[in-house]
Each structure stands twice: as C-alpha cells, then as structure tokens.
Length: 223
Image (tube, rainbow, N blue to C red; front, side, top):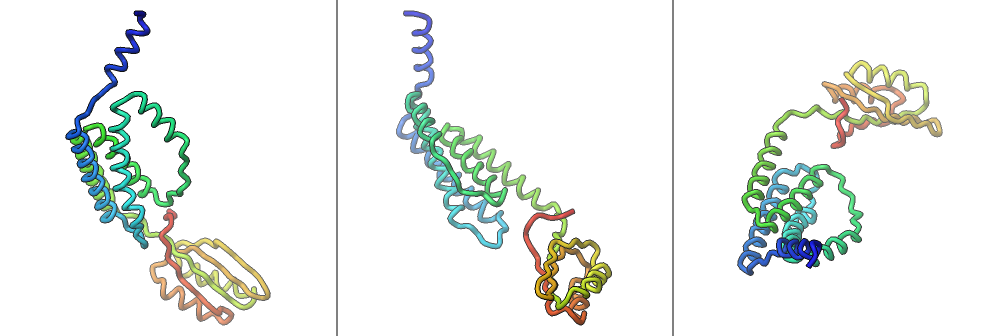
C-alpha cells in the first residue's frame, strides 16, 4: 500500500460522519425554529411600504433546505462533490432591490449551515447578535430625505419667477428635469424646505403656473 492509498483511506475515514436519525431530526428541528425566528425578525424589522410576505416565507424554507443540504454533504464526500456540481449550474436571476433583503437572505443561509452542521449554540448566538445590532443601529437618526417638486406652467418666461420663489422658500434645491413642449414648461426640482406648504402656495400663485405638486420618496438620501 502506497502513501497515496493511505492518505486517501485516511481522508475518507475522517470525512465520513454517520449521523443518527435522532441527530438529523434534531438539527432539522432547530433549523426550522431558527428559520421561523428569521421570519419573525424580518416581519418586525422591515419598514417597507409593501410587505413582501412571499420573500419572508422563502427565508424560512431556505433555512431548512440549506440545513438539509449540509446534513447530506457532511455524511459522504462523493455526495458533497456531486451536490456542489449540481448547485454550481443553477443560476439565480431574482433581483434584490433592498440591501436589508440581502442581509436576511444571507442570515437565513448562515443559520441553515450552522444548524445543519450541528452548531446550534453558534446559530443562537449569531441570531441574537444580529437582532441586537439591527435594533440598535435603527435607533440612530437618519437625515431627512429631500422631496420632489413638480411645476407645470404655460409659457417659458415664468421660469425665472418660479426659481425665485424656490430660492426664497427652500434651503436646498436642484433642478432635476426641465421639459419644454408646445409652450408648456415642466420642472422637476429636488428641494428641502422648512415650510413646504408656503413654498407650494407661492408657486401656485404665480400667474402662468397651472399645477404644483410636492412628492416624497423613499429613495436614497442626498446630503
């Protein structure tokens, strides 16, 4: 028997880990519990206008599935290599728009890996640490986002009056869009004002202005 044969035999024996049915059931149960915890955490933490229930349910399912995969590949090296090869050809094209969704996605995967590997204590510790971290960081005040102001007017000559009113009532402003068509003027202005109602009222009182709208958004904050 050569050194290579001894190394291969030793490696295979070391890698092989026969898990009892009780251990497998316990790991899957813990994964289900941690997945449900991630589900509740996402339900409480998320502050979206539209709650994505389907994505939240998929977090619990993902935790259990990942735990099952880890249990499977930890029992046999041949299965592990086959599993890696099978998963490597799968391409996921679902776009993640909110960074927090990506965080919860990785948290669900991590919890599944730790539970499948039998590291329940680590899974509980990570879940607790992430929960405390998110709650504490959410308490920090965030800058007030700027709003969008749309102004429609007849003719091009009133733009100077519109901008004078904006300068008077807004601390910060920036013209985002200027559209001229058929003697019509449309302005989209990003602004920040202490008295939004007064600003909109003064703009509406300009003779050529036909409509004024103030729109808030949940996008990125401009400093």
